[in-house]
Structure formats: C-alpha cells, structure tokens
Image 1 (cartoon, rainbow, N blue to C red):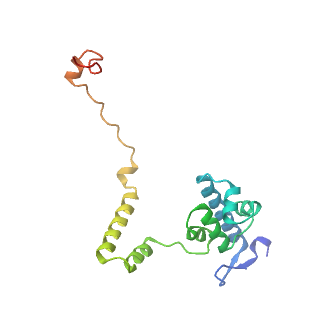
Image 2: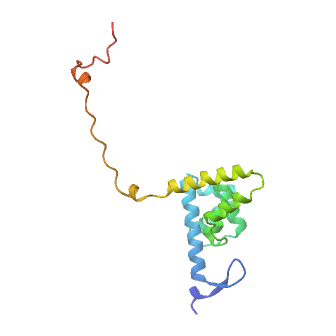
Image 3: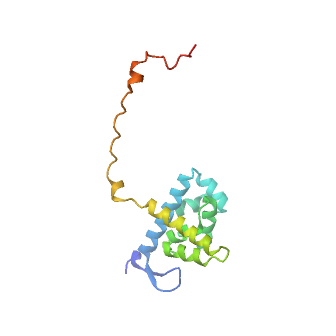
Length: 166
C-alpha cells in the first residue's frame, strides 16, 4: 500500500477513508476558506487573529497541508462570519442538509403558529422556485424595440424643453 492509499479513521470513528480522499477534502476546505476570506476582503493575518490561530497554521489549512479540527473550523467560521456548519460540510464532518430538512425544521418550530409556519414555507418555496432557472431564462433575452419619437417631440425646437417658460 502506498502512502496515499493508507487508510485512516474517518471523523465519525467508523469506517476507513483513504488518505487521498482526506487530503482532497483538506485541500477543498482550505480553498473554500481562502475563497470566503477573499470575498470578504479579509487578510490572512486578520482572520487568523480573529480565529485565535497562527498565520502559518491558517496558511497551511488554506493550502490543504493541514486538516483542522472541528473546533478550529468553528473558530475560522466565526472569524469569517459564516456558519460553522458550512465549513463542517466542506470538511466532510457533516452531511449537507437538503431543503426537506429545512422544511421539516420550520414545521417543528414550536415558537411559530401553524399560520406562521405555512407563511414561512410559502415564502421559502417561492424563493427557491424563483432561484431555479427556467427554460425561458436560459435563452438570451430579446432586445427591446427601439423607442419611437412622438410627433410632438419631433416638432419642438431643440432645447425647448430645457428652457423655462415665460
């Protein structure tokens, strides 16, 4: 067995994962962190300081050389102002939740009335359907027709509309 195929225990403590998969995940979460940091226009130094980790350690995480623990991912998420769950999914610690999970969560929320739950579900579903591209949207938009000058505008002398009336 080569070094890249050596098995290692997964985060859940169950089955074994090849090291190649682990290093690919580490690289993926590192790239994701770098992309989020860049999008937020934060320096590596500022994120490392806010997360309570060293600059070199964050740099190694971003380059996929280190696989951070769930605790470190949580600290980085707070520094980037994103959900820790997002980083956990990227790192393979959590499974990505589907929209059914969100709908189930809304339905189980005890603080909302049934009417409020249904309204929230309706808004969520309408936003999801609006975000899905339809076949019509995939076609390039048609150019609007050229506006025609009205007869009145054509008969006015130039600059007449700009000058004050006496």
